[in-house]
Image (cartoon, rainbow, N blue to C red; front, side, top):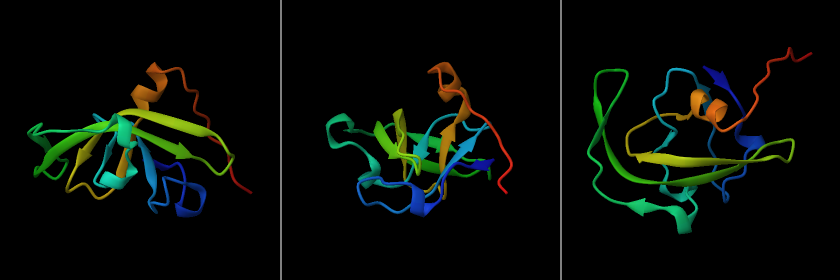
Length: 109
């Protein structure tokens, strides 16, 4: 996993959290309802998501989340799953690739 940004470089409607690009994730996920754009959020009983620790967590909604990076770029994550008991906010790397985003790695001096 790679941390894409820290608390100081993300603005999610005043929600403090870090997002992680994860090549092993199945979906974009967050436990925080306040991260979602209100107009896109659809609450429902979607069942449960199986976790990497073999546990399950309740899947209660889906919607879009807009991130503002430290470089001023807006990143719209579509179809983010609202899952109550996840500890991180993983971003599905493959979905970013499918949407035409280009990732790069560089050494920070």
